[in-house]
Length: 113
Image (cartoon, rainbow, N blue to C red; front, side):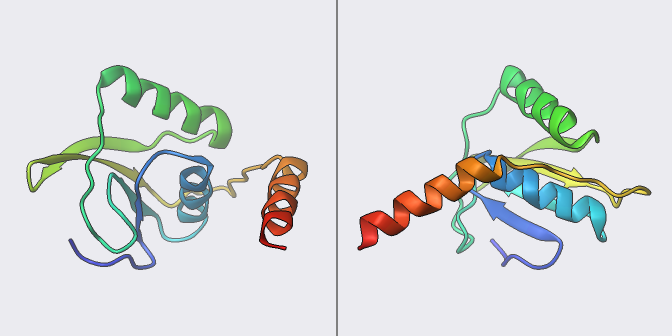
């Protein structure tokens, strides 16, 4: 698979980082997130069905207020989920639980001491 660039992001699974990336894409030139692909471009694949797509769509809409284009792709016999986000005409924001993120970072630092 090719490499990430300013309009393509690889993610192994759906997470808060996907929401952050989609928000950034909506506020710039748009882009695509490919779920089931490692950062180095290795295709891992993802287990996906209509219920899971519905849940992901609902999470994106509830957190960002925008509707993505979601498609299942198959590469090298493995399923990927392509989430495309167009540039928004209005600013999109995404609020993360800053306290919890800070606590998590503090926990990581404490483990490394």
